Image (tube, rainbow, N blue to C red; front, side, top):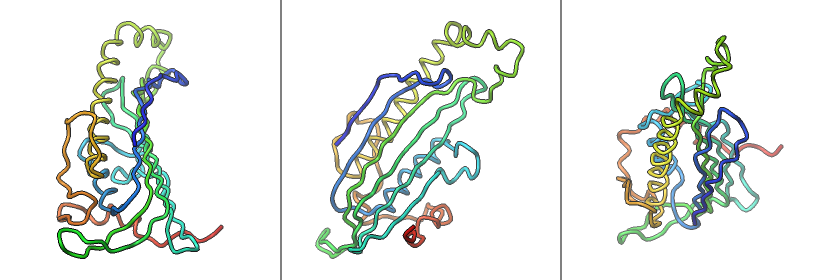
Length: 220
């Protein structure tokens, strides 16, 4: 299931809204390989954590809770940026919501394989941000900032909004391909077997994912 939103909220002058999309899936799949797939896209495309705490880890929140029936719920929020130049950077948000994760075995290619069943929803927001380092605000020429972006730099801003939308659409298609959902455009492919049942992980750095194997958070 996919929902999209294209209206510009215009809440902050320096944030130029690009778009929003949501991907939902319910059924059998393994979350960790999927999470690593999205993380690979993040690193390959030059994104970093918005505060620069650890460029390899985009998470602002990673919360795990075990339910009474033995299933697990997970919330994970990513906040990340992609520097372009001194006038522009990209900003993205991903919220992962995974509910009712349960381990199970299924038949796959004639063999029993371990997998998980759950309901997952990913919500993704995208912006082009102007004057990311506030250089205009700190300059004596800051009164020219609005005119600069509105007139002299408008075509450049519009070009980057389109580029960011295309880049994020490739991530959307990557996510949907993992779950065998039809893509809006055939502009990306995944080299990961669907649902993570079989996957060569030799090119993954395990240290990037140590934190996602921790025990569920205790009740508060």
